[in-house]
Length: 67
Image 1 (cartoon, one colour):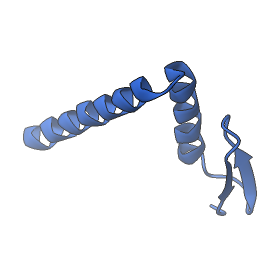
Image 2 (image 1 turned 90 degrees about the vertical axis):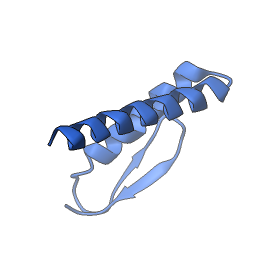
Image 3 (image 1 turned 180 degrees about the vertical axis):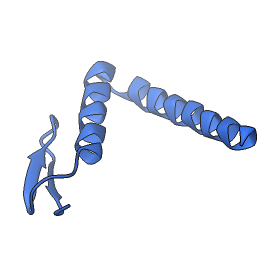
Image 4 (image 1 turned 135 degrees about the vertical axis):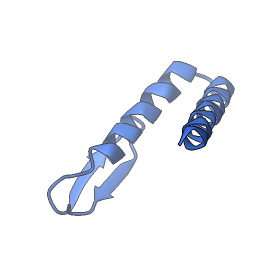
């Protein structure tokens, strides 16, 4: 179990580093991180009525399937 926890922590660090690297490459890193956070929240909270469409701060539209 400790090995699994260690691998999960290592994966979280790797993903955080990747996100930070990509954000650093953007013209407006704070805007990128805010948009990224909003899109992740939309996916996590994706339990919505059938054929719900959401828009992110970047103007992208997502059709969420029914729960």
